Length: 317
Ligand SMILES: Nc1nc2c(ncn2[C@@H]2O[C@H](COP(=O)(O)OP(=O)(O)OP(=O)(O)O)[C@@H](O)[C@H]2O)c(=O)[nH]1
Ligand SMILES: [Mg+2]
Image 1 (cartoon, rainbow, N blue to C red):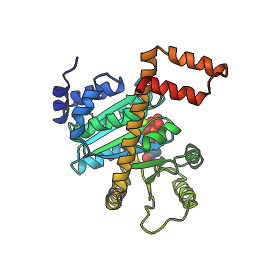
Image 2 (image 1 turned 60 degrees about the vertical axis):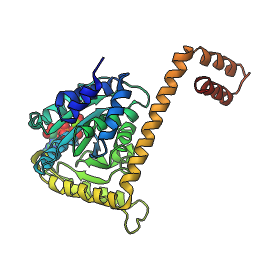
Image 3 (image 1 turned 120 degrees about the vertical axis):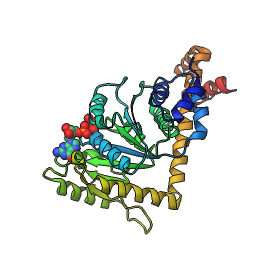
Image 4 (image 1 turned 90 degrees about the vertical axis):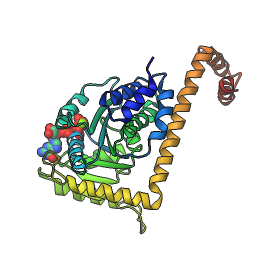
């Protein structure tokens, strides 16, 4: 058994090994998470969470590293969480990320963790917020969450940030890819990285056009800026930080920050409750009750809604 209060106290002091240990508990869905989260809850709510998303190879890790540099210059403590929704274990793409973060590896004010989820249904919906909470409790001022992988899972993780950066790069057919993955709707800040390559202006124009096609905005609405960067050379990264600061101020002023955090908490609670329910179905009845209900439904003796009510009642009543 782990001494949770001691571990949490060490994490709070910013000890990297304690932080790593707690994130491993999250990743492994440890039974002690309940105790960990109870101890962490009063220590959180300080960090500004920024999600980075975009197609493979656009430069998310390079941009994350460049943002870490920029925030370190401002004296901020920074957490980085690389989440891989597709892989059942850490490694692969995340190893490349490690290399790109190397310059920050020995900085005691920077925490870099990667996390894979076990392929549990809805696993990311609770594990990413919990890992973020660990970094928050460890005193991070800013937490950068990079998602590896494309599609719906990216969108889900991005939705757990206060601000979402969507990255594109010239010449990758990114406009179309972004539109397909639904990430054009979720950007608060758009970054056209690899602006040292041909076509960056065209990509920015195309993006501007696509963003403008949405419904008319009213005064006071946030208009997502488009920033061009060469992350590999730290160019334009200061502008990205400025855009983030503006977005944070805008959210803080009009209640959007609080409502995003509320929505996030609600999704997390729901995910934990659904996971707990599913586990109870199995552990209480060894699926026998479910099997019995299934037989009745298959034979037309019972309708599936009534069967579902029965199943829920059997574990909650
Ligand atoms: N020319 C140029 N290359 C860049 C720039 N930023 C990143 N790269 C290169 O693009 C490649 C991919 O960069 P990553 O930062 O690993 O991209 P990523 O989006 O994290 O990739 P995945 O995590 O695999 O999806 C690397 O070879 C980088 O060196 C840039 O501004 N200009
Ligand atoms: Mg990466």
